[in-house]
Length: 637
Image (tube, rainbow, N blue to C red; front, side, top):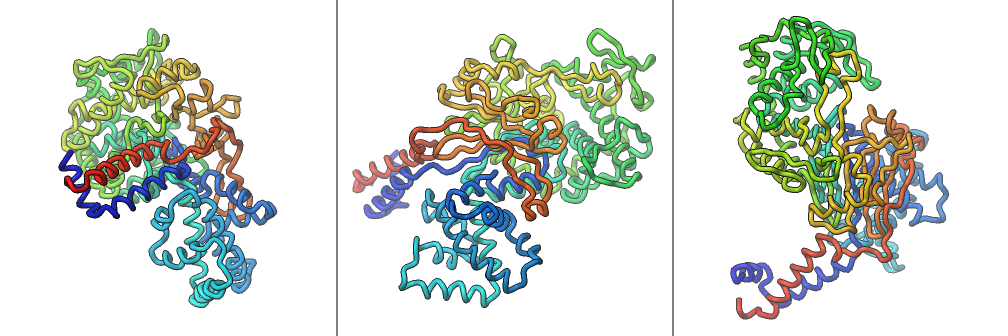
């Protein structure tokens, strides 16, 4: 410890510097806690995600109404448009002349200043200062410094605004203040899994997330396959290509990650012809017949290679106990049937002639070279690598924050409420120890991307679809059956008992205790869309379990009836906001898009929660103790 205090003294070489720091930290501890937002299952839907960040999941409009109770709804809505999309609103405001636009912006600028002070009032000046754009920091800070400018400074402030207008910088300054308001609305962002999936722009989401100073991510099952690909898993790579082809997202791989799929496309054109079940899901997009056929065959080729690689992995890893998930082991090629449980079903449109039935998982030399070449391309994509680096550095399989337990899928359980025990590497693991094991192994695999078939790399696939996976949460995946067997009874995927048990308060208390949290804690869970339109409630087990997957992705909105949830934790308590679907920026700028569908109060505190009561505050209190000790023993070091 003496070395620690000597180093601390180097940072604070005088008693006065120690006093200043202690006073600063003590003051921070008595501020209200910052606002946290929890989102999950973004599924590549960048525009909808971006809109939630811009409006603070509806909280900015609420703050405007609190700050300006005298303003009518039309004015509040107009201010919202200017704050959410300032550049776009200014650009599209064609009904106003240049002079009229200048007058409107000048008129609204004091409102923006007042709103910054209102939202940012619970933060230190230093914290707000760090959010200011470098080019306008001085001007913005001067305008924000005084609560109400006195008469002596009226001309000073007027001169600043006049000069800004004269230099044609009013629009830029206005945009800077609007952006500052957006940033102040969310102090800490938690993303509870599945940035990737069917949507076209997970890369843009990650670009945006990488700008956040305070962020954590809990990995989802779709994230895991992309992480596995960069870590060296060929089967994960085949899967991400298959899903991209299925949902018309190939441009993500080819154009934005710079990965050439030409060899795989050529392979698919040689060996496959379009089949109805492989028709890409376009979600309203319009593409040419030729493009649709290319995606159709590409999806078939990726699926076929995935099934071969899966056969290899299942035989390589008997400890995964996935034999029932191996389609090529259950096919009888002579009669073109497949065993599912105790029954046999016809298999249609499967390329039986492309499989060596003496060794079903064996790749041809062409296939092997093709996959090896593709994997190199994925691993050498600088942008993809940078984003997966970010997922590993800011992410985890679960996270504990301010008495909240966050995870994407489930904690595998038996129907009696016991944690499901999995034997891996000669160890029986369950609950927290199982989650910790999964995280340790995938991080290990990421450090050895040149190794493609070791246990750690294969574990990515188990986390995608293994029965004991905390990210999958089902008995087995029926991808093959959905493609090649008409009987929909075979398509069903049985969920882990966890999903029924999480409705019970005693089970949630047990889950919290497993992670050393007390009964006052909450579990924040994603992965399974809440069917709000059918009457399902996202708040379960007496408020202990909060499900925040509400269908941000368009493909799930018919089932959920909404477009996602945001859980908001501020100094007053917890609030769950359900969102209406996002249509377009144009609709927002016309005032046609109200983001809030319904609000639910999860928990209200009797007194505002202060920083000192948070995890971060406890760290600050410990720092104060250390500084106090050094102050009292200053001459000893």
